[in-house]
Length: 167
Image (tube, rainbow, N blue to C red; front, side, top):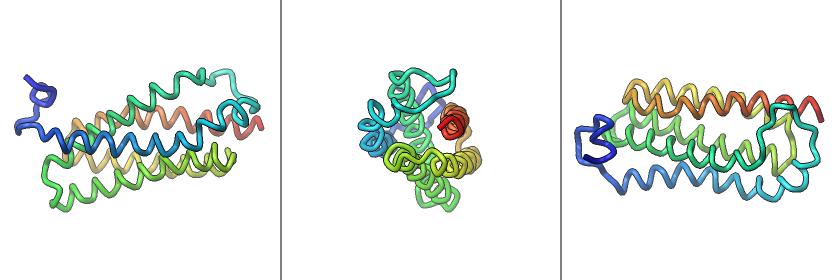
C-alpha cells in the first residue's frame, strides 16, 4: 500500500508529478536561502530579537518540512486534472503565495528591511489563506496540509513585527 493509497487517493500515484510539485515548492526555499544564509551570521545576528525567537537551527528543518507538505498539497490538487478551471485557479494562487514566500526572504534578509517584509508577510498570509480556501474546494486533504504552513507564517509575522519594532 503506497503513501497515496492510505491517504485515500484512488488513482495510481503519478510520481513524476509528485516529485515536480515538491521540487517546485522547495525551490522557493532554495531561492530564499541565497538571501537568508549570508545574513544570518552577520546582519540578523546583530538584531535585537524577542524572547520567543526560535534558535537559528530550527528554521531549516521547519521550512523543508513545510515546503514538502506544500508540494504534496499541490500534487493532490493537480492530480485532479490540471485543465479544470477550479484547479487552474488553485495552482495560480499556489504560485502567487510561493513567489511571495521567496520575496519575503529577499525583503527581510536581502534588503534588510523588516518593516517592508512585515507588510509583505501580511499579503503572503492572505495569499496562503486564499490558496487553502481554493484547495479545500478541490481536495480537503490538500487544504489540511497547508494548515501548518499558515500557522508558521502567522508566527513568523509576529516575530517579524517584533524584530521590526525592537530595531
